[in-house]
Each structure stands twice: as C-alpha cells, then as structure tokens.
Image (cartoon, rainbow, N blue to C red; front, top):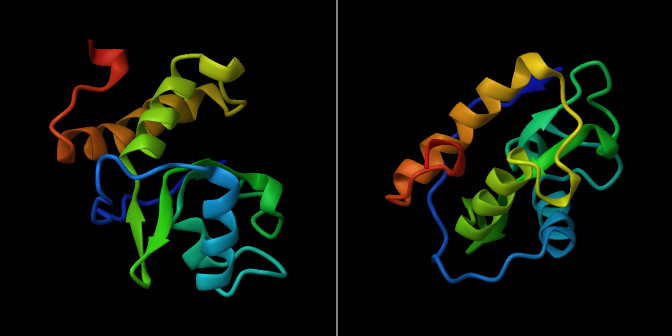
Length: 121
C-alpha cells in the first residue's frame, strides 16, 4: 500500500466546485489513463494500492482536477479527504500504518490554504 509522493500542486480557487466523478473523467483524459491508471493519474490522489496499481479501484482520496490544462489541488477536495480521514462518509479503507502519512500529505495542502487540518483542531 502506498501514499503518493507530495506533488505541491498549485491550488485551485477556494470556491471551486468539487465533484470527484467529474474530476476523475478530466484527470483520466489529461493523464492519458483511459484504459488503465498512469503515473500522472496517480498524482491526483493521495493513496493507492501499490499491489494493484493498474486498476482504477486502487486509487483513493482524490484531491486534484485538471484546470487550465494542468493539475491543481482543489481546496474542497482536500477538505473532503480530510473529513474522510476523520471518519466522514464511513471513512476510508487503508492500512493503519498509512494513516499518519496520508494526514501528513493532506496537512501540507491545509498549510498552503492557511488552514488547520481537522485532526489538529
């Protein structure tokens, strides 16, 4: 199991709408990952199952969308992923040993947004 490398993506506008299904379609097209995930597709997510990197179901906690031709972290997506890490929507099924690294990854985006992650409030 694996936490993706922090990409330090630029932030989208704070009020940008977030729909993970819509974003996924744009990311797949941009990343040339319509048949199977690619490294560029991976960059839009915080976690993936490293034992099964070639299946879309392996990718969790999407935080980015294609905006202006490039990948940007969407604040509402980061906040949604943070809420899921706190148990919202039933939480996320990831190995316990990855939780702190996931939170660390998300915390870097919270810092870019001048926000405190929910687990530090």
